[in-house]
Length: 316
Image 1 (cartoon, rainbow, N blue to C red):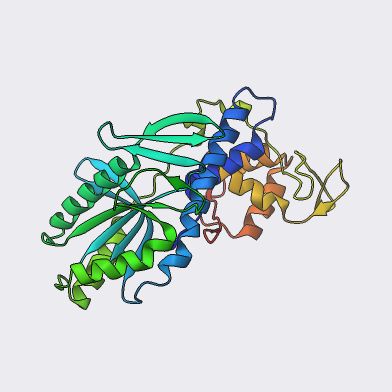
Image 2 (image 1 turned 90 degrees about the horizontal axis):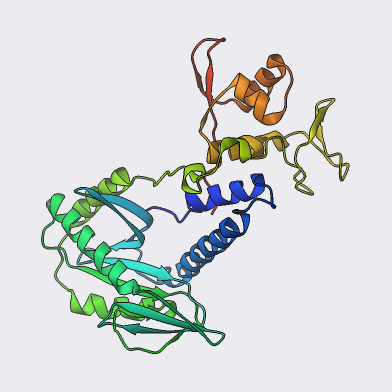
């Protein structure tokens, strides 16, 4: 019902790494954060194969963020059935892990080094509680809501026993168990469809400014069109082509990705003047032609016109 798309913050991290000088003092930290985000996304994607074994009438929502009173909560995967709801918190963890339920701590051992983390069981219980309250607000008070931590990496060694922690391959058998346990139908098809529409409508993307998140200045970001072949910035516009002075390659449409970077880093709103500054275009008429060919929607008259950068949201 809601596809698993590449998270917006992950896309912003990618754009930032393209546009931040590698010598910047924060580049190594941002790169480490990005690798963690990417590993999490790959882990979430890897469970989709096992989810495909579930019944076709089950509704699956990926990366849903809802509001419970004053607090937003995000679920990696939410599954709605006629008899129960299920929240999955996916973890892509290498090495071996031990979960101490008395201290709510997870201890990960990798390459002989121990690290302590907050137990993922706390996260999934919190999400479970949030969604149960959210269901009550939707006048669905008696729907059982179950939560599991799913280990997406099959090589992860779990050194503690808890029925709420699953290997991804166990998802189909676990749902067979749940189907036998929760046999009473709580929602008919029409009610499930209404609930599905409500979840979709209520989802709110967590659109944080990555510049503010890392406390960067706009002036620290590299401007110009990037070479799609060797990643050099900036390219030169000559005779209708963007030409790379380093590798000699040419492109007619390399500016499209540059404008997507602008949207991810700064804003979807952009003026002719901002296009000229960011793409290194000299004349306003040239910038106008670029924008017209992209068919971006706009508001305002010719002088004060603001364009709205469209991006491809099918990047999974």
